[in-house]
Image (cartoon, rainbow, N blue to C red):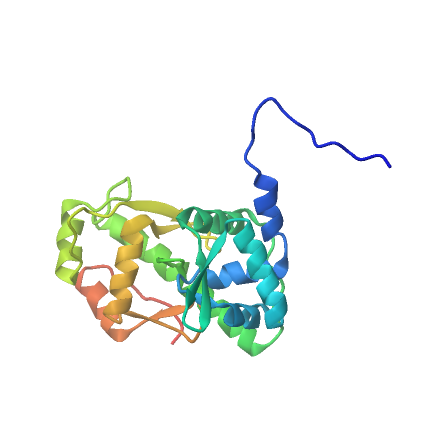
Length: 236
């Protein structure tokens, strides 16, 4: 039998193929999509989200963990799954940006509503994304709260301090390409800190068990007070 010998190169290269192979399955990409809400999920919850059995889901989670994409955390009787780091989040979101097509969804009112809600406002891991996130970032830049490098200006620091965000070191912001809108929302540690603040103040609230969020009346008032309000179109 002719055994094909592995190709050895003078330069040692990262084994990218192993990582991409782990993502090359619809159920595993669905699990990664669920984890983009920034919360820890159980294997059973991820399996249910992907529409597969728990035993099959466990195999897929093991494949993702074996490639270093997720890690499992044992707590009591449950095993939770989270992304292994922010680098993985950027990879998953980046692949969403360059993907030319969307995976098919059910032809139902429920599926249409869920997709609409995700487009309007959602969390991109720990950032506020969707139309709400993009428009809010645009407004913060236009009003001088963010500078050209997506960092808080002195005026922006004063604003977020009045909102209750305190820090010893000012968290850095960065432009994060929205995989659906194809425009930038506020990412980095600053984006994460502000999104956490919005959730704590209940200026935005989660819609069910999805990544979708909606702007509340108190959130509208807070944004209005900072001259950041507009006719938001998030579904209520």
